[in-house]
Amino acid sequence: MRKKDFPFWVLMIIFFLSSFVVKRVEKKKSIVSSINLKSFPVRIEEWQAKDIKLDKRTYEILGTKDVLLREYRDKNQDRVILAIVYSSQRRESFHPPEICYLGGGNRLLQKRKEEIKLGKESFKVNKLVLEGKYGMIKVWYWFLAGDRFTDSYYLQQWQLAWNALRGERINGALIRVSIQADSWEEEEKAKSFIKGVIPYIKKIFIAN
Image (cartoon, rainbow, N blue to C red):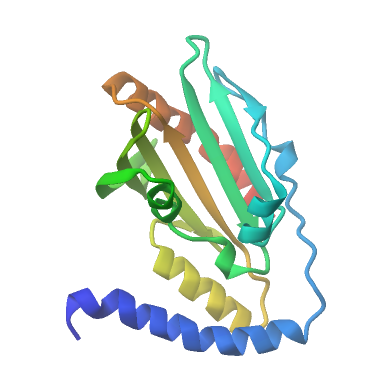
């Protein structure tokens, strides 16, 4: 199998698994989410947040009401946008953010992996650089699958499908941090924000 064919075959496997997953889930009682995203801190280190409202159509598209979208600003009024999409039932609630950005008319200039250091440890995230109507956009995102973070959409989808086949709770999330800026200083601030937000994300998703 050629390397470039890997995503296609992964998607095929996920597709066939999904048919079994749907049958298993339909027989079970609906699972009520225990995640309270509204309790997520409005203040993280020097950053203060305000909620960004979502319309009904957005919730319908995502298939979950467990969505957090916030604008965080520091004392210099530099801002980062934090988006968290969580679902305990629907894998289709998660998709790579570049799909939405490209659909909104932005141009993708670069996509690569980037390591975020957390003390002696580190984890990988996806980084996007896009050109939008009002300038450069930089995005960092990763996924939750069960009790672990991953930069791979395919790995997340596989893990959630496998959990469902075993009759276990489907626990997943997409976490995205973005800025509309091109300077090195603001990029470093965004990565510092990610480091500051990780403990709270772990507390909500992994501790439960």
